[in-house]
Structures are given as C-alpha cells and as structure tokens.
Image (cartoon, rainbow, N blue to C red):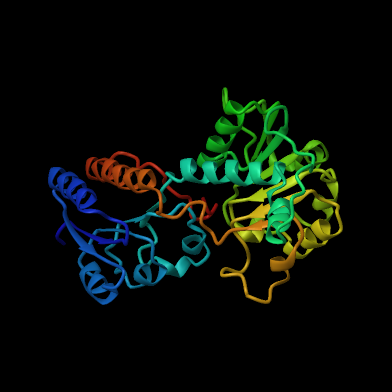
Length: 324
C-alpha cells in the first residue's frame, strides 16, 4: 500500500497545504486534498490511504481496514467512540485536536462578563428603548470559579480567570490530579456535590461520555447558590436542560450561557429559547473561525505526522473506551 494521506477539510489555506506537503515530503507520505463538496472523490481516494485527516463520520465509515490513523480536526470525538463498528480496523489510532483552548476560553470570558454585567437584562432594556442603568453588577475579580473538566479547554479558562483576578479556582476532573500553578485545588468529580454550594461561576468543559450525561441534573442544580452562573462549552448532554430552565425562570439561579445544547441545532420551538437570563450561542465557541486555531490544528497534525512516521507516540491520542 502506498503511503497516502486523505485530507478532507474546509479550512485549509494555501499556506496550510504547503506546510502539510512539506511535512509529508519529509516523512515519505503523499497528501491528497479535498474540500467538503468533494466527498465522493475523497471516499475513492481513501481506499488506498493509510492516514485520514478530517472530521467526518460518514467518510470514516467508508474507510478500509488498511486505515491506520484517523486524525480528527475537532476536539469532540464522542461520535467516534460510541460505535465500535465505525472503525473497520479496530487498531486504527484516533487523535483529536486540542487546539481550541484559546478561542473557547475567550468565549467563556465574554459570556462570563456578559452575565456578571447583566447584559441579557440590559439588552431587554435597550430593545424597548429604555434608559435604566443601575443594575448591580459583579466582577471576575474576587469571584469563585469551579471548572468541571481540567483538560486543554478548562486549563485555558482557568489561566484567563486567574489573570483577571479570580479569588479562587477549583478544578474537577476524573482523576483529581493536580495542575500545578493553574488551580487552587483539583478534586475528583466525585466531590462535585460538596463543591457546588460554594460555586459562584460553574464552567463546564466536559467531553461527551456515558458518565457525563446529565451530570448537572435537577438535584445538583439545586445545590448551587441562587446567585450562581452556569456556563457550558463542553457537551449539551451534560445538563438537564428542563431543570436548568426551571431554575432560571424561577429565580433559583442568576443566569447561564450555553454554547452547546441537546439536540443541535436547537429546535425552533424548544423552551430554552424563551428562558430568563440565558445566553444561547449556536456552538460557536470553538469552530474553525479563528485563524490561530486553524494554524495550530495544521501545525500539530504535521508534528504528529512526523511522530507517526518515526514510530513515536502521537499527541492527543484518544482512548476510545473512555471517550477522550
């Protein structure tokens, strides 16, 4: 089998393609580039490729048993971990792109400030051409944050909140392993119930796994203080959305910001649309819309292509049984 790479992406610039060609040339690979409107051509090419660089469940399903490495250009890999049959080669490596921390962290800063500075309410005032400007506001400075998920995204969020004067940042992860210099403490997720009552701003950056479905359920929402905010940039399935709406509309929470929902797109008649003090964005915190994200995505693929060719471990390797 020739050492070919099928590349099926929508964001690549000529400079990105040149970088990939250079890395492929160094390692003895031949890249084949396809845009998203060239699915049939990409599928045909894939039949003799060793590596696939894409984000397409349908294209991966069409891959032969000879595919050895699938590099997913997105961070969320749950679609590739929930169905064992999606990989014809059970030993095919799966990596994901951990380059979304910068753009998602900036989104979290944005919506955090919008909530703390009462932008949903001020938008309503302005929409009615009013001029009320005395709503009490709060600051990131001296506030307490809980970050649920201490991976690349959670760490970037913590660093930015620390730089803006957060009083305390608690991280929760599956392992509870410390992250030196980023958090005040890191606890296992099993401690979540104990942490929620002292949480002022809960940032959720969890992968989509069986263990994270409705991790923020009705009972846990009730543990949060009434002046707390919830921000979710992980997976929509992590929150019981009906319970969140009830808490927001009933004044049991100060506000929330969701960039991820279940399902997506959110149906036009979904009750969330009319929820009080809720900021909804259509899954835009990550995406490939920031140039830095695209550049890093390609850089890390090229770096891992060299690792792969040399038999070294790959960055961002996913354990398909764990889902991350």
